[in-house]
Image (cartoon, rainbow, N blue to C red; front, side, top):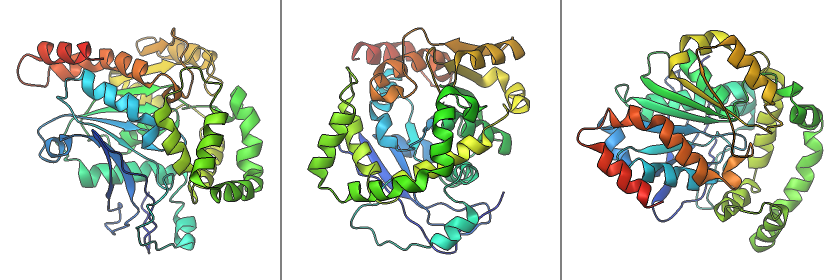
Length: 352
């Protein structure tokens, strides 16, 4: 699909300190037109030069919904450290899911956005492909990590751009089929597809509250999570600003309508590169989905969670999931870095 924006629509997130930075990048769509629809890219330390010069493999994460990279901060920091800081680790937010900074000059064109469905499911796939075309050299080998709907997006990326060099694609809690038929989907489909406009007014009123009060409400809402990662509070605050939450709900409605049948053709074509990780108590992707795909692809690598991780693992288990993911990809990465990687990987593991 080819699409473009006649005028720019900007979406951004906050800028993190320490080793993580969120940067703003323009990209060009498949038509060759400059869209200026900004994506949020989270990278760690000096890794950008390594990718843009083709000197390192890239670990690229595609988020779930809401698609805000800030939720993955702990996960990415841990993964980068476990890799011995030898490989850049990036994540791309979904278009429209991050609030722009106050200093940004905004130019809105809702008509063109609606016409091209920029914030819909297909538009989000094109958004990620456009990012790769314009910011990642074709010779760069990729390790793709998808979470939830990010898994569907990754399969679509591999289908639409099979020339990309993908070493591995890890699909965590994959919502790649029958979403509306899942236990959570049955509850959320009426809300996301037919009633989401009712929620817009409360969201708007909530956005008018002082940040301090909103932070208090967020902490209260998430207070039941025993080991809550407090780094998720700030991105949640950003999600409640502007149109971000509405765009996330719109994408959710499309997920319910469009994520129906599992793409067995693409899975079969890339089976040797895919690792699936299913939750044991995941209401978005019930266990019988795991048994179904394992039966249909007996040679595939399908794992069932034995650690009690929730679907939204970034809320309290980002560090643990990152350590697990590293063990799955360490051999692929080690074989592609000059020198003795046992030393650097082991040293980094000792720090976490």
